[in-house]
Image 1 (cartoon, protein in one colour):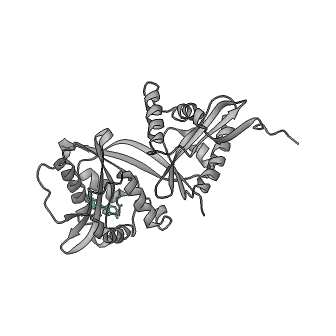
Image 2: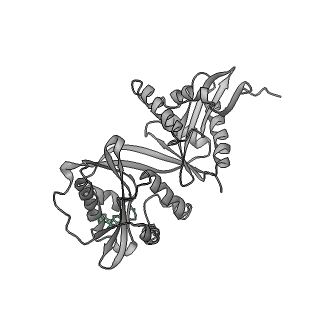
Length: 308
Ligand SMILES: CC(C)(COP(=O)(O)OP(=O)(O)OC[C@H]1O[C@@H](n2cnc3c(N)ncnc32)[C@H](O)[C@@H]1OP(=O)(O)O)[C@@H](O)C(=O)NCCC(=O)NCCS
């Protein structure tokens, strides 16, 4: 029988003393001058229970770390996967073995969907994920608008925003569901993910702070929602999600909702609002462009569903 070329490779969760080496490897795309700080911050956040290193795996040969992969587990049964990085020979085989072992680890943690964001020019990472059973879900545009594009007075109102309170959460869940009907926002995910998991994901992105979540109402009816989050550490606001029910679309309300988001941010003293949008979601892209958003980055999204 042919000897297995990876016989001398051991793969497993990164022990405490190997976490730094593993993160330094896996965060190889972070510019060299920023990397030590990012690694240190990540380790401190993990020690404080704010980030999870449970999905940090290393490949070792003769006790030396030669490869690593990290899937950061997130509420809502998802995990964000950083592409495997391998130093030295047999990179392709080791990367594949790391991702195969990672899938077992994620299943054991009841993760339903692993997601990787890959730069458009990172052909090799894309290939590695494909070979490991990930599918190319869609492409994302990252958009930004800053104070110069924000309205300077309250936006003319077809829609009124009502803050989401604990007693209105059932209404929020219902209207989010309604906004998914015939959506062009990653439609492949529709019906695949449980609404509770999706909401848990929105909540986590909002740092468990829902004080900037709104129901959008037209007259006496809920017709949409606008979920904003403030990221203090980077002094940026984010549209975590916005959407309109099917019968409220196509009448310019999407652009109005985007303007209302900017107005909320201005009122709160913020000066930068970002979001990610599916490139194929033409009405959304147009609505954001009408509100003055511009593209600052792009990513390809690869996903793997782990529980059927
Ligand atoms: C995205 C969304 C909020 C946009 O709101 P909307 O009210 O439909 O959009 P608007 O009426 O403001 O129209 C925006 C532009 O898209 C165009 N448009 C509307 N529906 C379209 C469709 N199905 N296909 C292509 N273009 C469309 C409009 O003509 C308009 O273009 P114009 O400014 O050149 O005239 C709404 O479609 C929606 O909630 N969709 C489901 C959830 C979603 O995708 N959320 C976005 C997450 S990032």
